[in-house]
Length: 125
Image 1 (cartoon, one colour):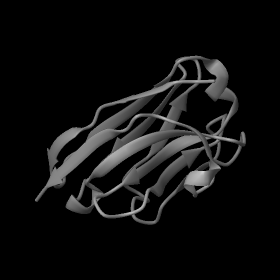
Image 2 (image 1 turned 180 degrees about the vertical axis):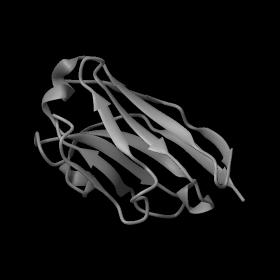
Image 3 (image 1 turned 135 degrees about the vertical axis):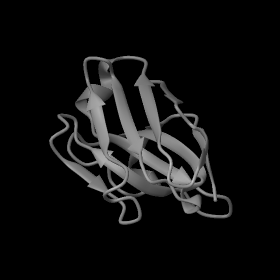
Image 4 (image 1 turned 30 degrees about the horizontal axis):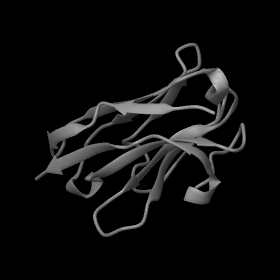
């Protein structure tokens, strides 16, 4: 069992940046892939970015590739999402996720073993 707590969401103008953090309650998550999903109003929850347990492998949704680098610090049981050049379409609730596999978070909500409570990101034009 692990609890995930996200922080860093907020209101920002288009072109701005935010950094999301997700702190796990114990070191369980350090052995598994982690990452982020998001859900925009009226849409299904979608994959954003994932990182392997060691941090050596990362993957991104096409919509955020080159703008949202993901990283992790296993000594702090924390995963980060640096969100740059934000766009109004990035407005969503962002959810931290722990996968069922050490190397690949997966891109479907069913691939996720544990979820955070979510943090709101709102980008104004």
